[in-house]
Image 1: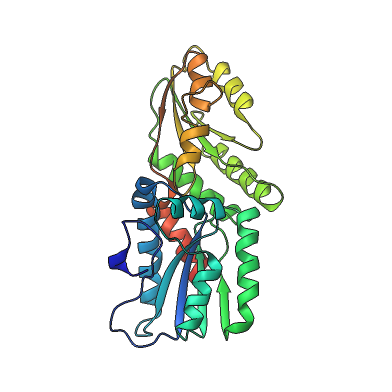
Image 2 (image 1 turned 135 degrees about the horizontal axis):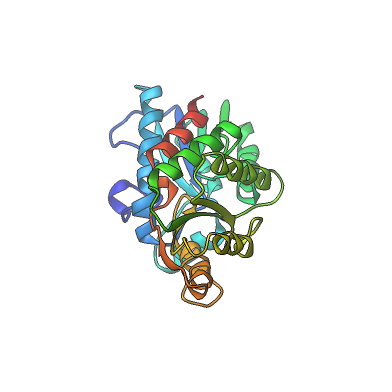
Length: 282
């Protein structure tokens, strides 16, 4: 898919017309989203920043760059709407067909969970076909990453009297669970009692966060819910901000708390973009 063929924010080939055959290629891989607004707002700025830094690090190499989605359901949903999105295998196959011998894979995946494992498996399948294939670490890969992300989240949300900021991650098992625990610790270490951390599928969950909010009553009157997700698409809208009675927003409102939800994902944040670049080029 060329730049001219794609709608804004849709995974597309990012090479330059008239450039010589590339020797080095880049895949920018993430979970993906079916939301056009989230792609344009969150994923496209992330991809531009990562690609730009990568090209500056490898000037004059005639490089090709492509975006790819790890999620089969997201790609299938896009396909039903007439939008083509590359899988990681498709992206690597395309670079190989173009003659690339060295490939870097950047990622917007936050932790080394199930999606990152699938990405790593694809990288392993294709590694023998290239002279060099480098897979960057996920965004949240250690204590320093946790401190950087915590500070970025706090900077985005100023302290307001009577309001708590609830940073809500997806949750993961294994190494991903430990990484999210580091983020929770880093947020707690900021010294801001108004910043709370929860996970949709992990601990602390919604019930624990509700208990923390209740403990701050009656001084806590409102909550800003901040999804800790690179792109805030349907998942965030449904489980965090949905109108049904079990969403985070509905449960907090039922407890008498006024609720607002941040719509921008992590992908639009320069600190997160820099973190991805560091993991790719460091």
